[in-house]
Amino acid sequence: MAQIHVAHLRKYYQVHEKEPGLLGSLRAFFARKYRTVKAVDDISFEIEAGEIVGFLGPNGAGKTTTLKVLAGLLYPTSGEVRVLGFEPFKREYAYLRQFTLVMGQKQQLMWDLPPIETFLVNQAIYEIPETEFRATLRELDELLELGPLLKKQVRKLSLGERMKCELAAALLHRPKILFLDEPTIGLDVTMQARIREFIAEYNRRHGATVLLTSHYMADVTALCERIIVIDKGKLLYDGDFRALIERVAPYKIVRLRFEQSIAADRLQAFGTVEESDGFTATLRVPRAQATEIAMRLLAELQPDDITFEDPPVEDIIRAVFAGAVPAEALNAAAVPASEAAATPP
Image 1 (tube, rainbow, N blue to C red):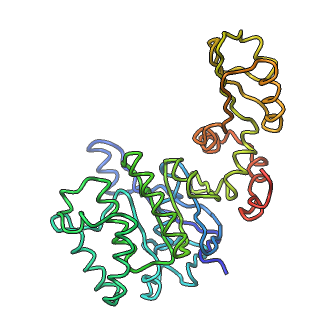
Image 2 (cartoon, rainbow, N blue to C red):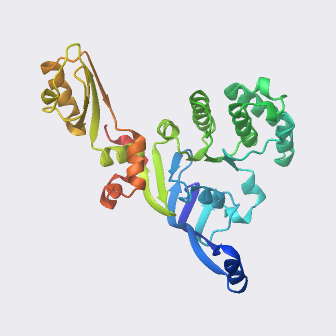
Image 3 (tube, rainbow, N blue to C red):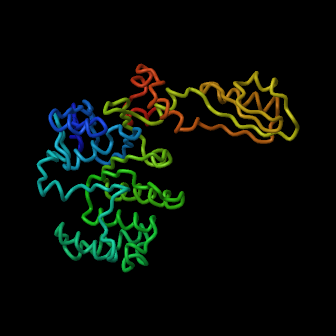
């Protein structure tokens, strides 16, 4: 049975709208106008145990609202939601002990106290036995290098140090489900990589199921084989990440460097020339012909260096958000991650 089951989930809000000025205030006092906002509009998906799934969408797409429904912080307007067999909005204690919600723009650490104080509070809340608490803290210290931070006031920690402590505080009770909402937001590239490594290692050690939202495609590329894409509350895509890239962008980017100048018109026989200054060039070539074209380039032009790359993931996801990808292409790419993993590249 899937650990996360979402069927036809809807979450609507009634938002008050008021015209500007005194006259608008008077009208709103006697006849208030409301607009229905469909934050989440009929989405369905299932996530199996141990999966790390990227949950993507532009700002206002409904990602955080969905996570809050899954965490039991919001009551759904309609639809069926089950996590570990529980209905989250019932807030049963047995369920609350088995998941965690980490939001990169919120914090649970007590600002004027060291992180260890928050850890001890969480130990009491989750009723974690002392031996288990110490063992988990040692493991998290090993993975996140917490030692120098535990007794330092939270307000004196850097953003990256605080996020490490936030993750540790959220994982002391060893949850089976991790809802991570922008866990690397605002961090430098080194700390982003460190947090990604930690999430992957925690998943490997404990088989935790992870639903991750992030605007940093490096997070998704490094951690997720499967992605779910929503926009304006509606599901756009649910399937294998690699399959989406190959379907939406059936081409490769070729970067070339030459010792002697090569005219751009000579490159046009190999693919679409995107950039060329004589000594360096960038081509776009059909994905299916990449190997053949590479052999021809090496034989005929003898470049000093040749590199093949996939197109930027950001461009592909942006095209999906913008509706530039036909529904048929998305449906064709939306194969189960397990099937896609079995398919040769």
